[in-house]
Image (cartoon, rainbow, N blue to C red; front, side, top):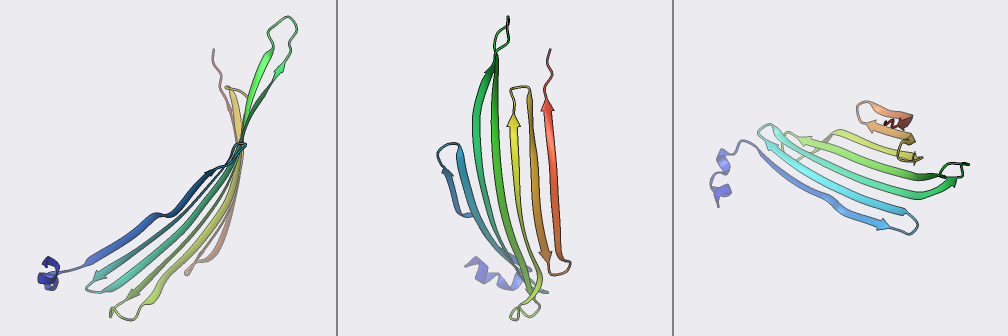
Amino acid sequence: SFIDTFKDYEKQGKVNASFSPLIGMSLSLGKGISVQIRQNISQSVDEMPTGLTLKKDRSLTTSASYNHKGGFKIPIPYFEDMDIQNNVNFTLNFDMNNSETWGTKNKTELAQQALSSSWKIGSRISYSFNRNVSGGIIYEYRENETKTTGRKIDRDFGFDINISISG
């Protein structure tokens, strides 16, 4: 074959295998509840004259959400009743990632060069009062750990308010 014939002239080679998603599932449950789960896996091998590098990545992503639509009327004397339509959405996310890199100079004895793992969980509550007013609150907690820098924790909190003015 071509590869066997010209193997002596090869300078470097790379092989990738990715499964994205390896496993995935989406569920729509009753009463506005939905759930999604995905798992991804990838591996790559780099072969160079200076050695061999093997990289493995794995991730898991999950999301659950609940949506509720409703409304009410406010009676206003001598005018039309004010119809208020509102929408509430609650989302919860969880992600986990692992990555490791192995290397060797002699192409037989692999040594771990890098290792990292991280996970995060977050939630968001969105509310729209009508077509003109909406907003939300978000919170996220993250942990990241690497072989070189150790463990790091981050927390985020935020909110947003959107008011549409038209005339």
